[in-house]
Length: 307
Image (cartoon, rainbow, N blue to C red; front, side, top):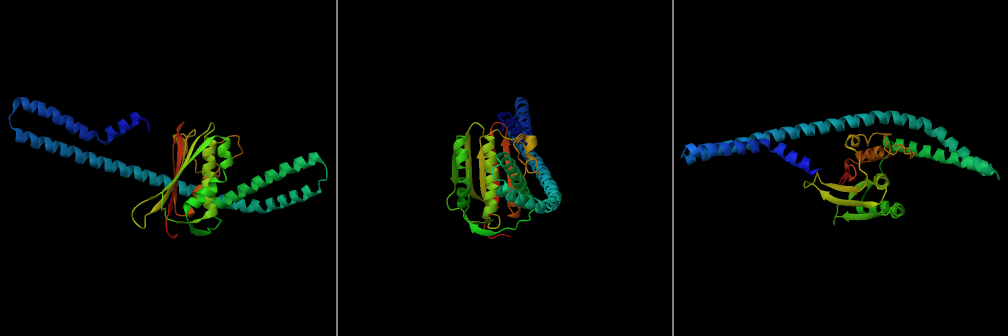
């Protein structure tokens, strides 16, 4: 957050207190010139300051409540939007899945029957590649619509993170990206579907790598948060030093088929699938970002047994 904005926010949150203090200073100067009643002056000063603090506290509480209400409304709208799109996507996925499987089988048969025609081999390989790409999109849609059940077990999150990082070692070296891993000791186990959470981490990590075109630092951390037994969570943060996301775009990144990667063949399902998987685990996912400074994806997973 820019320094000027921080100063402005502090003034807004403490404006009445500052006004009260300013009034006290004016009163003190004027009264000092015309009166010797020190006790009366102290009483009035105290009352003015108390009034300023009390009023500012009420205003801040009201502002916080309104911000929380707005945040909750946005989450409900997003959930309803995803649910509606999920119903449509599930229907499309099921309709397309069977004919697509026949196409893939047909391409496999053609590959074994082409002989030595090099041009035909190239064409068949292109068809095969496109068919498998369509198949991966269909699987993504089914995952997004929660048609894939959880196969949950208790595991240490460090193991899942290490397994996922092993998939991207080559990309990190290729793009000269420094990896920093900060996992707190004695982390509690989480009950998760290992493969689906690996998919979550992979989606986020690949986005971070894409955002760091000229190298940078990728930091992944995990720590326990919360004190109550029922409210304890494991917080996993993936932070990069990439190009960042504009403020007006952050709210859209979890929408299905929304992508900022124009011309890359990206279907825009990665973060939608990520959110769907995290929701199934009764967790949370949010994004903090600033253009040209980087992005943080913060995931919260409940510890203990699943609900």
